[in-house]
Image (cartoon, rainbow, N blue to C red):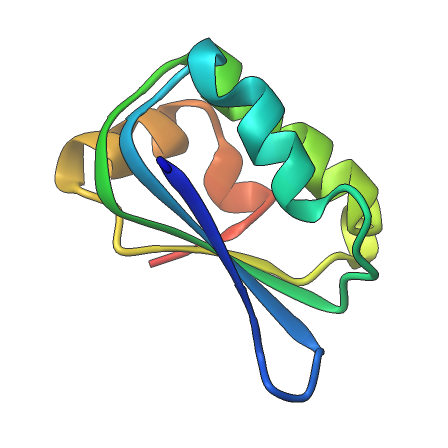
Length: 99
């Protein structure tokens, strides 16, 4: 599995870990990772992501909308320097807490 999810013991935080290429091939799997869950906080862990394209950016926006838009609490963590550049160029640092 290349998209792995984990819910905290209190049920308040969802962690989505993406492994390998984060592209359109992961669209369905990524959406299913959060689709039926009530989300108060989400962490997207990109530690093992090797690539990110425009469809991945779209998937992150869909997650943000599902989690409450401007009121959502989504952190993107463990990004490589290349992925951080892509997120910054796309102004995603204004929409997400990126570390």
